[in-house]
Structure formats: structure tokens, C-alpha cells
Length: 65
Image 1 (cartoon, rainbow, N blue to C red):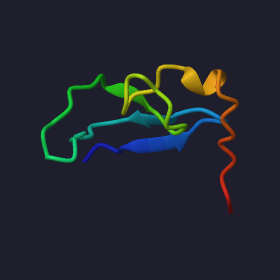
Image 2: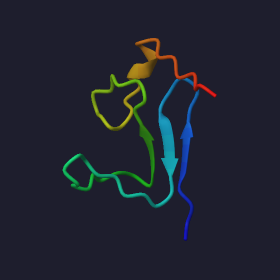
Image 3: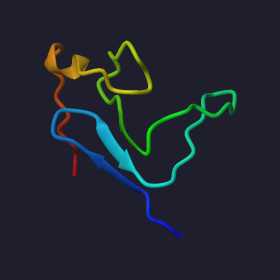
Image 4: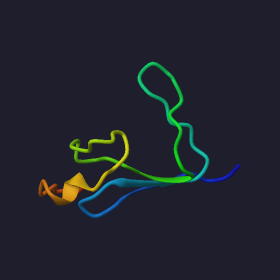
């Protein structure tokens, strides 16, 4: 089975690669590219995908250990 990788970028989106099924809250599948960037800042105008807004809102993506 192929691996799925989800990596938080520094102060940016989650970078997702591999065969993954993305659905909305109603279970409908959301079409996406094989590699995608998912919003972590909550401000994207294209949720759940990143649109780069984190760069303008001073998003701090520091992960707690």
C-alpha cells in the first residue's frame, strides 16, 4: 500500500502527498491534486486548500511538542 505523507510546513500549510481521499463534512469527496497544501491558518479563501493568506496574516505555525 502506498504511503501518505502529511508534513506541516514552517508557518504555512500542511503538505499532503500520496493516495488520500478528502471529503467535506457531509462525506462528499473533494477533488484535489495528487500533492496538495491544506490551510492551517484558517484564513484561506479557498478552504480547505492553502491560498497563501498565511503570509499576510502573520500566521505562527509553531508546533507544540
